[in-house]
Amino acid sequence: MTFKNHIDGQKYADDFKAHAAGLPGSDISWLNDLRRTSIAKFAEVGLPGPRVEEWKYCNLNVLKSGKFNVSSLIASDEGKITSLINEARLDDINGAKVVLVDGYYHSSMSNIDQQDGVTLTSLNGLFGADPEKAKALFSQTNDLNSLKELNTAFMTDGYVLLVEANVKLAEPIQIIHLSTTASNDKALRQRNFIQLEVGSTAQIIESFIGIDGVNCWSHNNTDVVIGQQASLEIYQFQNEGADTIHMAETIVDVAKGGDFKHYSLNIGAKLSRTEIKPTLKGEGGEIELRGAFLGRGGNSHNVFTHMKHMEPECNSNQVYRGVLDKGGKSAFQGKVYVAKDAQLTNADQSNKNLLLDRNAEANSKPELMIYADDVKCSHGTTVGELDAEALFYLKSRGLDKMSAKALLVEAFVAEVFEEINITSVKEKYLSLARQWLEIEG
Image (tube, rainbow, N blue to C red; front, side, top):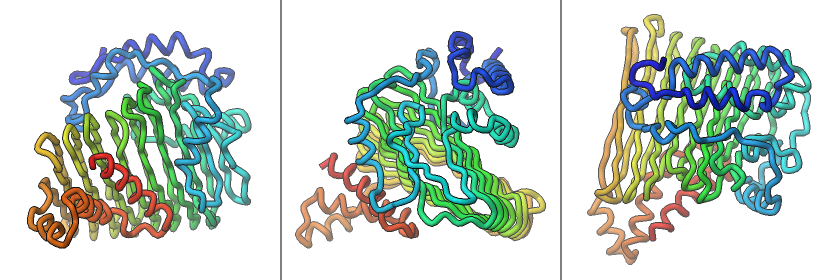
């Protein structure tokens, strides 16, 4: 029986029975047990419905039919795959590259040469090489919910990054997720793990790309553990096909003196949801979350953050910007929790939204839950239109209306990414934003 306000997920449970034997790692007993336990927990709860507060603005009735089949590893058009990946990757980044196509690791397009102190592999590769190490990763996972249980039950692959103490990656790692025509009516469920030990550093550039006309569900879960004085930066680009459902949940634990930065840009998919749930578990931790979402013509972008300050003297900052044109919809839900003992917390939240058309919709719901008395916490949100006086000024200087409009929107979005210190990443974000604006023109 599903929980009140949830959508019955029994069809997915029935689908699991039909496909369980063919899922990766079916010869590993603990993994089979984990999958069965996870699908049972999911079936008991079901999919979150619109009456669940955290999913108020993200309607999952489109998933109610349970028609998304398990993705399978089949041959695809290698030429098309190569073209799309070349478009997504950054050529000046010389680090390792992990490519996942239709939910599975694609070895011929990847480059995961190892360096001392670093383990980078596909999840299925770890199942085969060291299943006990994989088991240990799953035993450390937290913040379980029904969708994460569903992901665990059906996961087909993913990536694993383990960095030993005081190892600093010289180059960012590029992760590219690609959905092709072979994924039509399929669910692509990937599970990823990142662990940085004491004093280590890493940067990840993660892209999600797809093809219009492909009706698939891209469902990613990532568990991150950042050790003391360790630092991780994640840069995400989401430009899925116009008919794709995209979900990416990232759960992060940050130890004493640890640092986590997450930048995101969402411009694709008919329904996208980015969830980031960091927990500051040690004094002096730092978290920076920044993102932009651009939507029109049926795009619905949802960003949900849940920041937990559990220890004193930690800082967190959230900056999100939305641009919505005709037919676009967005929602930002940002929750900050400050525990009783988390004195001297500094937590800021900002969400501003720009409407380019009266037939666009932006929702914003910042929330503070503060149980300590010596803190500095703030949140602010705005929804508005382009400044008419600024438009008039630019037009009076010789710009046509569309160019003036594009310049103002680009400046609005650029604020999110101004602190990025990887030049090609910053340029990629702004380039994708410009392309989105040019489509309107």
